[in-house]
Image (cartoon, rainbow, N blue to C red):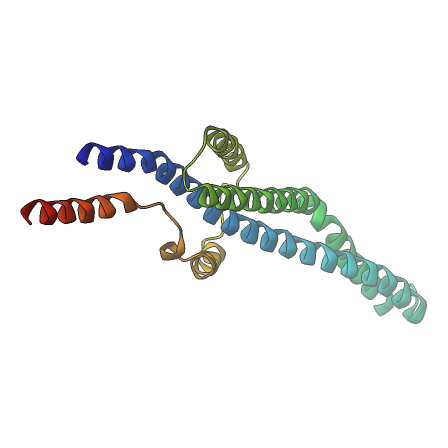
Length: 202
């Protein structure tokens, strides 16, 4: 009976290891897709504002020139508004807004897909109760994707933004709700052994 209990305990160990890894990736993927979605949205807002300022500034410079003329205040107002417009137009290119938006949107999408893949695989393992060779292969692929994505992460992430989304992840996926297989047979074996001893004594 003790040998059977040990075998059952060993059977669930690979499953628990794979699930622990998958849950870690799942929670991190959720954190990252929220984070990079917010980062992309921020740069999109700044890019849009700069475009609007540049457009309005161009119209303002022309309007100031027509309204006030090319001499006196009109010349300086037109020059000032034109300068602001030029800075607003150049700022997104100087700060590489477009490439940052593309990068953050790409990471947001990739981590979102990774989250759903990891969630689906962990649920599949839960249904089967024990991890299979096929599931372990899929888990390895997911780990490889996660490792590759990590090389593209922002080198200097915004800590306040991360803390905000870490709390959201803890609320959405509390650690105590994550499923792990338990050696139920060990309890059954203990009961059976007790019952057998009682019967022998009788």
